[in-house]
Length: 102
Length: 352
Image (cartoon, rainbow over all chains, first blue to last red; front, side, top):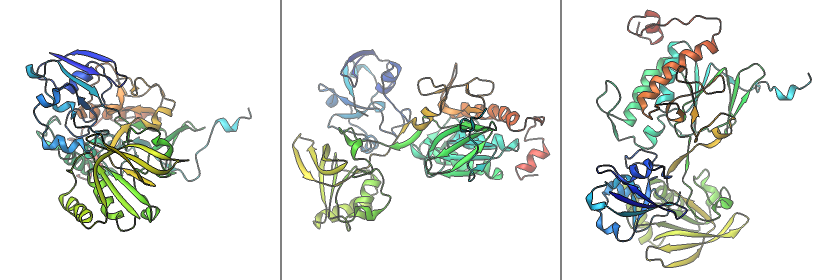
C-alpha cells in the first residue's frame, strides 16, 4: 500500500506501507525526519502531518484524544492529523501527507 | 610545565559525590538503586521540575505493559514505585536545572555545571537523558528567536514583567488558559488565540476564560500567529490568520506561546563526547562511552541491537553500576550479592 509523503524540503517520497502499521511508523521506517517522541501513544504531537488532496475527508475522524493532542502541535491547519493515529489499510492506499514544520 | 589553566580544579562551592546522573527518568532512578547497592552516592540533575522524565511528562496516565513482573502500570505509577525503591539511598535531586557543561578536572574527576549555577563533582557521570532536554516548543514563525526572552516568553517567571502590556497568548492547554486567566487583570489588553474553538484544558478554566470574553475583558480568536513585527527583539504587532486564511494585524508587545514541551539533545551535544546521530555509542559490557568515566544508559545510548525499552535501560544500569564501582573505589573488591540472600544488602535497603 502506497503512502506519498512530502518532506519539509518539499521532496516527495513514495513509501510502501504495511497493513496494520500506522502512517507514523511507515514514515519512521523510511527514515523520514518525524520525531514521534512518545512512540505512537498520542501523547506528544510530534508526528504531525497535513493530509492532502482530499484524503483528510476520507479518513475516519480524529478521536477526541487526538483532537486534544493536536492543540500541542505547531502550525495546525484544518487538515492536520497525528500520523500515529492513521492506520494503514486498503482504504488509505495512495494517501498523501506532508510533514508539518517543527 | 606552567599550564595551570588547562587543568581546572573544582569550584569551591561544588558538591562532591560518587556518581552524577543526568536525567531523573525511570532509568536514572533505577541507576540510583543499582549504584546504591554498591554504596555509591548519587546526585541527579533534570531539567523538569519532577522525576519521571518522559513517563511523567508525556504519558503519566498511559498504561505500560512490558515491565517484567508488573502486568500493567502507568508512567506515573512506575515513577512512584521507583522513588519508593530508591528511598533508602537518599539520592540528591536537582530539579529544574539543565546540565550545561562538563569539565574534566586536574584530579581526574568530572565537574558538571548546571544552568542554575550548581557544580557537581564526581569520578563518574551517567547520562540517562533519554532524547535530551525537554524544552518549550517554538512556533515556526520566522525570526521568533530574536524576540525570545525580550518580548516572547515560553514561561512566566514574574507576572509583574507583563503588567500593563499588550499580551498575546497562543495555545489551548492548561498553561495557555491558566495564564490567560491570571494575566487578564494586570495586562493592558489580553488576546488569546487558538486554532479551534475547543480546548484540552480543565473545564473550569475554559468556563472562566469564556466569562472573561463575555465580560469584554479579554479577546479570543480562532486563529494562529503568522508573523511577528518589531525591532531589536521588542514586539510591536503580530499578524494573525484565521482558519479560512483571513489575515489581520494587531498590536502586541508580549507574546506567550504555550504548545507544551519537546525534546532536544541540548548542551550534551557540546560535552565533547563521541556522538552518532544524537546518540552516545557505548560498549555493552559497561555501557561506558568512549570517554572513560562517562556512561550512557537508556534511550540516549546506541549499540548493536539496541532497543529503546525501559527494561533494556534497567539492565544497562545494573552493568554500568559494576563498572562505576571500580572507578569510584579502585582499591576495593566488588562483592557480587543477591538482595534475596545478602543481609548486608538488606541492611542497606532498610529491611534487615
